[in-house]
Image (tube, rainbow, N blue to C red; front, side, top):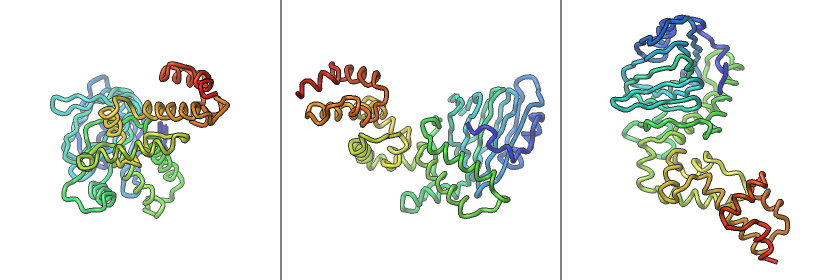
Amino acid sequence: MFCHSLAGSKVIHGAHPEEVSAFVNRHIGRHSLDLLGSEKRSSSLSFCEFAGFGLSEVSYGNHVRIKSPALEDVYHFQLVTRGECLWRHGDDRLRVRRGQALMVNPDEEIDLEYSADCEKLIVRVPQSVLNAASASANGSAQTDSVHFGRSPVDLRECPSLASILEAVFCELREADGDEINPVSLSYREIILKKLLKVFPSNRESRDCATGGSVALDRVVRFIDENLKGTIDIEELSEVSNMSVRSIYNAFSRAYSTTPKCFVKQRKLNKLREDLLRGQCRNITEVALDYGFSHLGRFSSDYRKAFGELPSETLKMAS
């Protein structure tokens, strides 16, 4: 994921961890570094500015522990692209693995332990910029700052956020200098919206407290209206104005299942209705219409749900 994405902006390569640490202190955020294993000159760092964001790829190449005071006026989007890191917060321990990302708030102290093979992508987001985007999305001014929950999100479940980050890296390779242009500003606005959608926050909690059931009803209605299409979790996030994790929690509370299983069951129910009404003669065709491309698995799921094969249901309609 994002392999060599900032290769053209390489700042340090094959260096001592202290060299990377010194650069991070100057350009990304103040911190202290403790080496927990043998020292190797295998640290690397890439850094560049993009539309007011600071983008960096960091690899200490050693087993290290990083401590930092509160970030004060920036958020950090941190994505582990290789290895893992352990985040300590008081008595809490949170292990973030490859493909997982989290948002670090401006008022939070950082205590991270990197595995020797850990590599991370870090996006530094100004607090004022993200809060302005949140206020714009909610259509009103806000008196308090956005505060993200301490929950990692698997970016493999959020392909559109991963895709827009990839697009930014392509733009960086083609860009002339660090100037902010209309294209880069467009990317910035999309990234801000995605961060606010994907990661749970106090802003969303407040919205859900007043309209959570309404949002879930909207999701279910969208699913029922698009059963013959491909429905992914990010579409449901857009429809409901809820984060991906909150959608999972909402479906667990309301239906004791996941969004993916709920969608599959809704598709199976509607497909069975079509069979019983005699609205189709070819089971393969109707299965493909509803997005079941693996016919053997479809038959197995159908039998598990209704205690009979699709062909047996079709005979009942004859």
